[in-house]
Length: 445
Image (cartoon, rainbow, N blue to C red; front, side, top):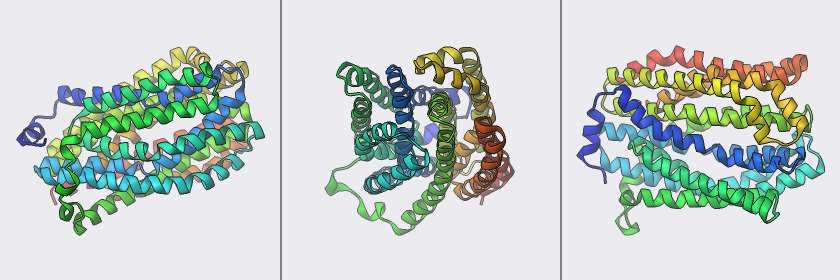
């Protein structure tokens, strides 16, 4: 599957055309990912009450938080596999896919143990009504069975990114979210399964995406008897993978803690505010995944440049991907500003939820602009596997967020909550920019 074409591809100049050719399939595929939550939200909102919408919001954040604890698989696999491509080490490139899938199965087992205590804590901290709590438990109890598929896809997609197979990722996401879009209204509304129907639709969609991903990678997955176990279980390679993934895991835990606390604190302002924040967060998810499209392109190109020990290509990859990300962020802000009212109406039928969401919409409009730098620098640092600096700067940003969230929400309520989120994103950007020169120096060591 891998051949000299990979090396030739890496040696091509990094141009605007190459960046867009990589980024556009990723951008399109990632823009469909939030539909797993957005379609759930829209269908739940058709029930004409705030309770189902709030239940989907808090249930989805539990599942997303547990799964994203293992998001290091996607990021770590991309950075290390891209560097293997840049070095022309095709055996190690394929071995990284198998290592990632093995770790994913361990992660899936851990997620079953984590989800119950985490859901208990989340639902209790959010002051949910008994009805909302019961519906949220129904949602989580079904969605957790997609853990092997969802976590396994992290490894698969990370490996596909590293090998610049962005169109394959697009096909996986189109299948996954297309199934979800079709089944959501059929199961939840047509068959009357309600919240359980929403969760079942997502479950089927995620397993379908995983099956297609395995098929896409079949050439890199040898038969069991042909697996080069000494290479896959090589101690030094495993140690490096563990170090990179540990740093990304800690960073991801801190980032999820920020998102999680945002949801929990919003719940303290009432069910309507919780539902309104969830509606707006769906827009944020769309913006995040659109921006991540360019960040993933940066991971691949920066990783290959580091593998080839080419500082100028690394710098050009960082600049061009960030340039286009800034344009995407501006477009997303304009879309949210001009079409926010209609998008909110699509997401919720409850008039009080709509009015509350409109009150906080300006914060959402500005968020793509204040967060684009953090997302792009994350991609650059992941591609270079400079994960320790990324972890440390996340500690700084999360620490500032934790210090400000209580006094700011006491002073300004939900407005203060959104303000602290903006401050956290800006701090991530500034601290990573401070560390960027050391990333370039590391290329030629």
